[in-house]
Length: 296
Image (cartoon, rainbow, N blue to C red; front, side, top):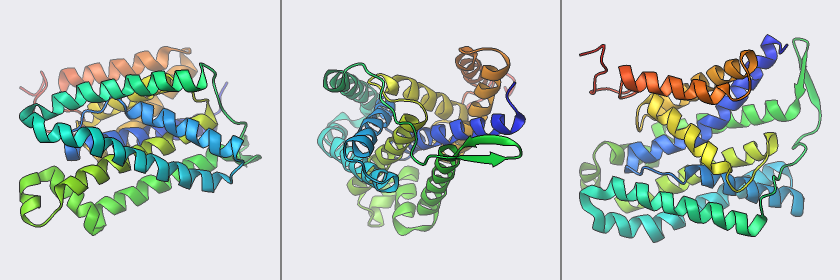
């Protein structure tokens, strides 16, 4: 029987992975209205890239983390400039629908490209930092504590960046009113590219940690994308703070279902949660305006 301490650690760890991917997806939707269905595949690419850096090049884990983040940021900027920017200039009011179609296509290209390049093998490493830590009589790997701490630290830094820096305030201003922000001198095109690059960066780091804790494989992005959208819908579309809270809520629910029911039930529970929330509060736990059947 799993101990309460280990149950808490597993829940927090799973939640920290969800946060990196879902919060960045919420930022995309809330700031630049991109309904991305390739976000999980960015995590998959981050997993493969970090595996190459750690195993083939033998780099230090921190250096591999920094390089993975930098490459994924540049890759996200490239995708936005080469594909999303031209689409935004010509699609008008249908922008959000077209991003759904485009990112779904990008997802298929990335998944099949990874399958052709790396095969169907599951790739992973034994650990980033070998060793165990004893916490209240429960032994757990050093990797778990390190990944949890780094993930939380990244989210905190990201939150302060959005809230207190000049560029962060510009990003939030574009999300509130793009036309007004441009009048006050904000380069909207730059903000779009920066936002997409940052979202790819966070997803890539999430993929690195997923590769370490589990494995990476070509279709890993399908599950990651599904979990991210469940969190985003549960929190309320575009609500970054809500996505952080709901990542841990979903994680605790799934961990309890897996522990006390059986494997597979964690996916059922997550679908039940999002279905109930859509039924009674369609805008999500932290959304507004649209009313559920008990609020009418």
